Length: 148
Image (cartoon, rainbow, N blue to C red; front, side, top):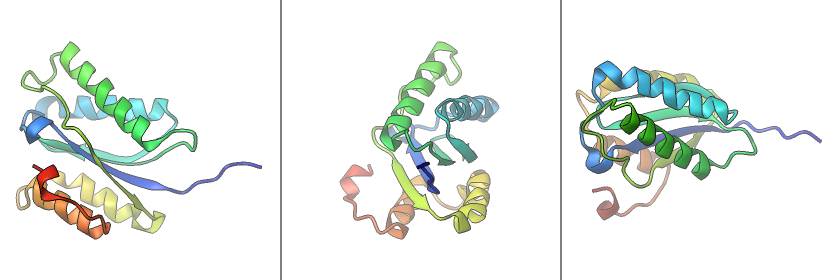
C-alpha cells in the first residue's frame, strides 16, 4: 500500500534575539538556499519569504521526513551557509525554537499571499504580535516568557 499525505506546514522562526540582520540585498539568496534544503529532503515549498528578523515557510514534507528534523536541518544548514559565505555579517544564530502550524489545502492560496506580502505586513505589525496571533489562531497555549 502506498503512503499518501496532504499536510501543509506554515513554519516560522526568527534570528537570535530577533536581531534585524537579514538585509534585503542577500535575503533572496538565503531563501533560495533554504528552498534547496527542503527540495533535497523531498519537500515542496509553496512560498518562502521573510523580513530582517524572521522567516516564513509554507511547505509540505515527504512522509519519511520529520518536521523537527527538517527545521533543525534548515536552521543549522542555513546558519553555516550564512557564516561561511559572510552573507549577513551581523548574523549570529537562529533563535531556539520555531512555530509550525498545519493548514488545509483550501487555505493554501491565502497563506501564499500572506507570506508573499511580509514586507508590507510588517510595516503595520511587529513580529511578536504576529507570532502571538498565529499561536492563538492555532489554539496553542503559550507562556509569554518564552516569546521574549
